[in-house]
Amino acid sequence: MIVFVLIALVLVLDQLTKWLVRTHFLLGESYDVIDGIFSITYIENKGAAFGLGEGNAFVFILVAVLVSVIMIYYYKKQEKNFWLSLGVSLILSGAWGNLIDGVMKSSVTDMFNFHIWPVFNIADIAVCLGCFFFIIYVFKEPNHR
Image (cartoon, rainbow, N blue to C red; front, side, top):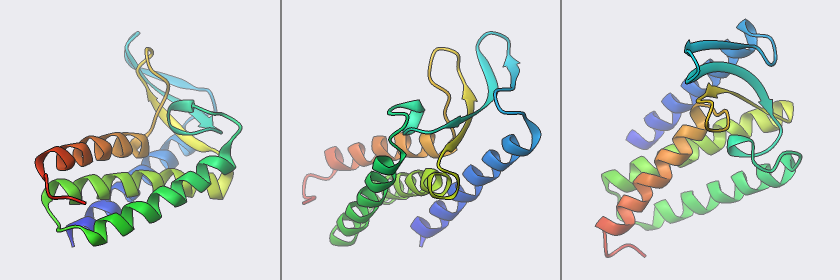
């Protein structure tokens, strides 16, 4: 049950932040939160996470669907635990958050800009954290398949 709640929560938060940026900023507009360190910057990313692979949206949509199918299949085969549930929930919600954008508008709205890193969004954060927690699961649970 926690998996579905977390997926829904992250999806809503991701889509809400993207909608807020699209409705309150002009494309390319930036607002400094911490001068020279962190800004909210509205960009539309036509690639994958963090602006990688721009122009290959179809490939990344296909990869998101494939990763989702594999993660769901793997999750169903395993004995559930906290780290696995957390990792799978975050990976799926992040993949689906960006997949919604990719399918609906052929680009992904990004907004968090730490000036030393490509601009990203909540879905990107969820995928990264999900992978981290999934790795914890793999190392803590020696009996996983």
